[in-house]
Length: 365
Ligand code: NAD
Ligand code: ZN
Image 1 (cartoon, helix red, strand yellow):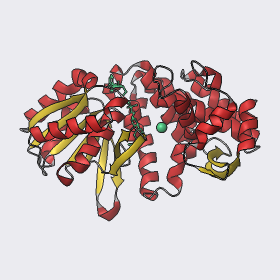
Image 2 (cartoon, protein in one colour):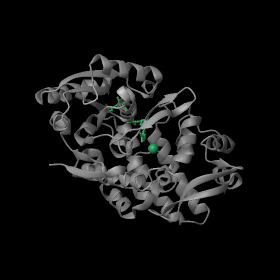
Image 3 (cartoon, helix red, strand yellow):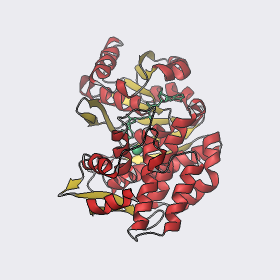
């Protein structure tokens, strides 16, 4: 028994996201149903040790020839070198156009394997098997794949939609608490964007998401449905999709100021602080009540997430440094910034033309 989310694409195509415990053992049956004769499992060394053998056994039971290509865990593998080793590994396995790439892991593996699949032999089919909360609710949906360049994150990439996403929520049982919390910031984000009822539900049920109760599957399904809906309605990314960046203008600036050092700050922690700041800033601009801003920060803090600039280990620098870091986030026009702000929980909107002075005064408070 599992949940499923149907994602329609342009041109009448579509794919499904299956969500439930134990789905890693169903990879083979699903791959066989797609008519593949061989599969290349792309993963990182940590996830390979935990789930590689089960996925391989599942594929072999279904009669597929398969092999595992494991890169070192961490963002550094989303590189030209990582990409080359994955492509050459897939070619060594003789993966052909009709075969499958299986991306087994977090967002790093999904982006890297997806990009390899998009370009190998001008495109082979791929299957996402996301194993972090962030990957299950965010990166495995939407079709964005890619790697980093020394010039910046995600600068080399392609849109390549998976044939199927198998989100095995039991894999999250082995995720370290900190990664679980970081992914949870993105879960809460969906409620804050446009679903106040879901935020209420999160306040009541977040513990079940962490402990692996049925609430976890339900939350993943709700988030996938939300992201898929936004992506389908705004494939070219000129409107609504920007709302998914709620909390990310501040969050990305904090990641930059902490030199992307995951020992200090991981993405979801930056997002948690960014969400709390976006609501506090909205309250300060008179857009929403201070009480609602307080409710957002309280909930994130309850789940163990940082919510204030002072929570960044080693500090986040002064307001001017934050402003400069935000200005690098490519949304500046004549000294004005674009933010996602909110008129309340679940009432976010795109706010262009926010002046540097307003942001500075807020950050200096
Ligand atoms: P990650 O892939 O690095 O995984 C985090 C850590 O958890 C890794 O050390 C990994 O080995 C480990 N891990 C993974 N699954 C595990 C499990 N089940 N049990 C134990 N350990 C496990 O990080 P992430 O947070 O999943 O993804 C971050 C990446 O996602 C970034 O590169 C980001 O750019 C990308 N991303 C992409 C999109 C998109 O739309 N394509 C969206 C958001 C983020
Ligand atoms: Zn994010």
